[in-house]
Length: 213
Image (tube, rainbow, N blue to C red):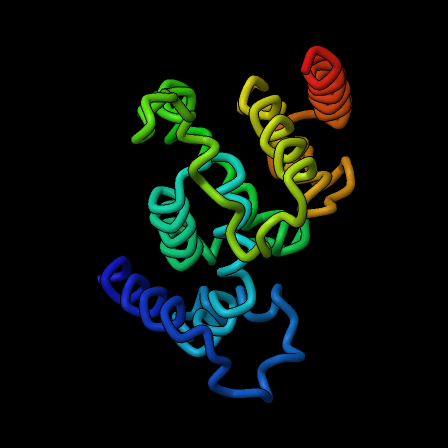
């Protein structure tokens, strides 16, 4: 049972995050993926160790929900295990894997209407309201130093929330994952021109929103 085997590997490596064999460190991602296609459990564990934090961070940035980000990033590794044989090496492994992850996240947003969830407001104890977005601190980031900077970051994330899922994904892949335009196009399965349009419109919208604030 492919899924059961892969999920067990993901859970084990996800929870301890330790590299079990330092000699595997220099093996390329692409070579490891080819070994995963042959059901090499050690190669799979190495890829999970290398990408688990980046996968979670990317999923969280799109979904803005910690539990859902963990679930979908783990599901992306399960998909990786299942379809590793389809990796042809025409793109970098990271590009191929991010495509799986981003598609899962965008599909989840469409199915479960995450727009409404993240935009929802909850009541504080003092009777004021705060968005769910403001309740979610960025994973792995130290507390923001200074009230002014904290307010600016909160405003920026609120502005990002107003972008379309495609615009947000393109922006995050460029700014956070530092992918070049051709790789973003490969991840999102669109042309480079479309990526540039998404980025241009995203930046325009952010500037306009931030000026209002």
